[in-house]
Image 1: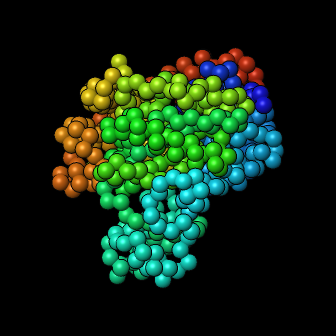
Image 2: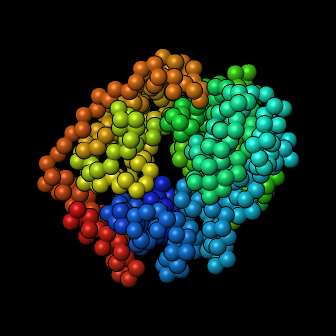
Image 3: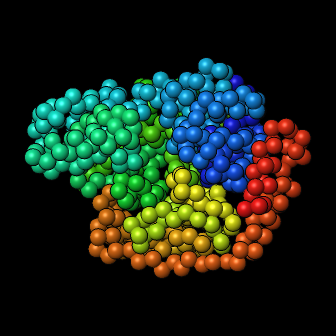
Length: 503
């Protein structure tokens, strides 16, 4: 199934990341954007760009019908969903297939099999994977929850079957807490995911969160590409990711990798995916869930394997074999990723939207930055406030940490609050440097010493910001392929650029 033009149904840094991979493979790209993103970098970088609608995601990036219509109009023969939005929507994957457009991701059947937490637990049992004890189906009532909890012992955790991101989760230490927690978790799950189904499992106290990256093709090949340590979390959201984990031996990596591959093959999985595990103090591992898409933290895997995961996704979607056998996968060095957010650590990490008045980006040996902002860009309040992913690579974990600290010191984002100083504090902490981390590490660190933000909000004169934005967009217009201007579909991109110059 040859591919010539790819529509990226996403925004921000992941849209740019996918475009760069497409460009290196000679594929043309189509961007889509909301009104809030009309001057976004992914719009300026794409060969063609089309407006979706107003800023709310439900009226733009979640409108699968509009995206398919744009794919038809633009002549795109494939859609890359990135992460978030429609990336794990089996119905959208099916809709793409029904109109002859390649969905760059797993088939809808595998998404349904592994995307639901309870179905995935059943699949884990069928694949003989170790998992956390508990129910494998949604709980029918609080009485059933009480019976299951009594059988596995407290503490337990209630979780939303369709959940993620910490929504619909409640830890329960004692039986008398269970009825209230059940009602709260189910209600939150209903509001967040449209399904109030919850299940219950044994609470593994202070585990490590370690995940395995897999890639599978349509020829029956599937490999694992090592692990990522994602234990530094705040409110169940990953904050720092690194590869490899400091506690995973070659033997443990092999056993976790083989279990992940077994699960993927049992469900007919194709393309990139991630199998998440909890690891206890004795280094026993338990299946947690599978993410049926590219992960935010995929760059650290790319840095230690030397593989381009997005290009692998594209080639698998074209029907090509993986081109790499398990014994050929080699890990080298260490990589750490920090998610740079427009948020205020001093104000309970509230989002900090607004205009970026100054931007000094780090560089030098071992530094990679996947970024989608520029001076003059207004960070909207409508979406996740991630500005960039800063990645440091070194021969050892210590070198990677020191490089990240140096890069964070170089990084200046003016006009808004960011969490840059928050990362410096974590990376200088003795427990982090010694890899004494688990999923409770960061909350304890914050409780012991609340955040102080030393970053000053720096301002630049408005005329300098406007000039910088104009020079950047003009430079991009000059570098755009000549044929782009002749395409009628590029009117939206041109309009977006003009709006950007007026901003």
